[in-house]
Image 1 (cartoon, one colour):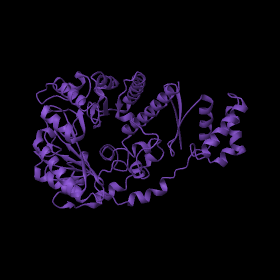
Image 2 (image 1 turned 45 degrees about the vertical axis):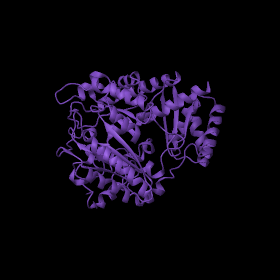
Image 3 (image 1 turned 180 degrees about the horizontal axis):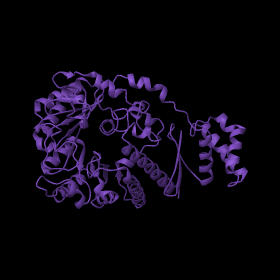
Image 4 (image 1 turned 30 degrees about the horizontal axis):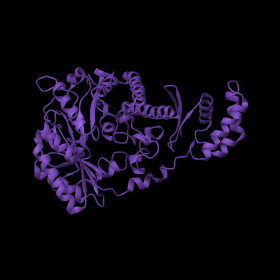
Length: 467
């Protein structure tokens, strides 16, 4: 499977099944397009055939000399023989093994607080209530959750726990107590906990910062960008904006972590489709690790992204990619989560085919101890899997998630980005499409654009190194 596109002056050819990326000139680009049109599943033998040559010659002879076309075809054939172009899909035969694989639980999202001190207008958690009631997780419930994780993690040593909300700092003492308990259990069970916390920053102070820097492998800091953007969507319940309070705290925390092991995480909506300016604002504030996500909401929501917004959004990703290239050239680069792409290694086979592991390797835990496949399913009783006292009582839910992959989702089969997004978010597919094995089309369109931009950035920086 071949995907071709042009971006920022580069002609890029992606061989989807091998992951090989080729930056080519115009004649090479046109020949590969011609070959792909004739047969997207070429082999070395078909590339060498007289029929293939005649097709290329007839299509492009008026534009390029025959000798050039012949040379390009020979180069393409050589690349195909080396497993770098027109590579067959070798993953699909293994999908049965991936679906039947025995998994262990390796990560928990602890909803330490179903309460929040902000009133974000797009919040899927309903200001922390998650379609239910306000509550804080007790130490006993959290302790049982960590015990469950240890007991169900098999031989895996590194375990991940994210303190989530609502706003987890509203239950800070329990966070600290659970971290201490986890550290005790590490020694007893030969495990290592990687703790993270996601916070809006309102309650951050020096004591909390010191603890986070000592104990948290990562921290996610919620900020939507420019002051007017952030304060429109992330106000306090009295309507007052949160930007002026939290930005100095976030800057201090990021610097105290040497600009590593954190993310500034924003959300863009229809109200700030010029979101590349918000990423630039993060950069101007001194942040080096950042992400800004498209809002996901019901089409009736006034802030929800619509199909007609996509051309503008694509242009913003292009602007952002070009800005990042220029910053990198100056030695002032930063990381943008959606443009971070590994073209040489990447995730393991099962992760590449089936995604985040929600419902199988990753679970969300409510303040009262119920298990759900992930934080976005919390409150939907159809996905209540069990609890910390009785364990998993509905393993069939895990089986349903385990069987979702890029081959069971028809829209993924012919998508060039399938091995980068691994089928996309199942919660979004369930809520805004036709089910777990469907795809959230708006999200897919944006992901494809992000992958294209990420690859182009790699090409541009490699080009810069050669100069």
